[in-house]
Amino acid sequence: MSLIKAVELMLSEEASGVKSVLAEAKKVARVAGWVAQAFKRGGRLIYVGAGTSGRLGVLDASECPPTFRAEPGQVQGIIAGGAQAITRAVEGAEDDEVAGGRAIQFRGVSNEDIVVGIAASGRTPFVWGALVEAQRRGARTVLVCFDPGLKKRAGVPDLLIAPATGAEVLTGSTRLKAGTATKLILNLSLIHI
View 1: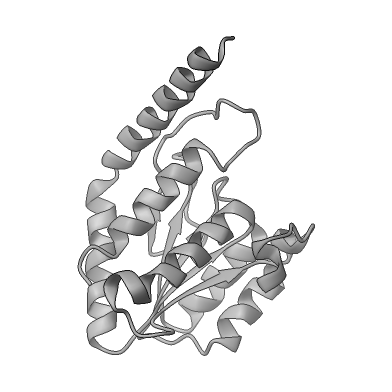
View 2 (view 1 turned 60 degrees about the vertical axis):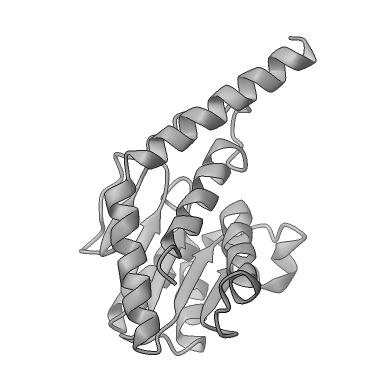
């Protein structure tokens, strides 16, 4: 495939991912309303993910103070494997469900907060551990994933946002179309602040 054809193919795939997010607009708007309410009562928005999903959450959280004048700590990103996982893969960290729950405990999550799990597959144990613990503590919970057939587990999360982005151009990657769709959803979740 020529370079221009490869670029056109990837752009076409990205555009289809954006369209899939549009189909979830009502759910994304509901989350944006929850975030605005949480901030009014002094709560926080906490993103939780692993790998690319975790990095996007950390990136979004770090951009909120300069972009939206959010208070430091008002939007936080938790990534499986800790700070070192932002720049270097920490193999196996995404599989530790208990560590996900501990990360929520460590931050003192309460019913004032909103916890948004980000997991392209929808199956990441670290994220599920965080969501279960957050909901146990009374926080509202959201899962952003790209498996429209995924089901809630025992009432977790409160809201599931699962655009049907389809297969990636590069098999196994979640940093392309799913990454773009994730960033769009995170951007839109903060539309009311």
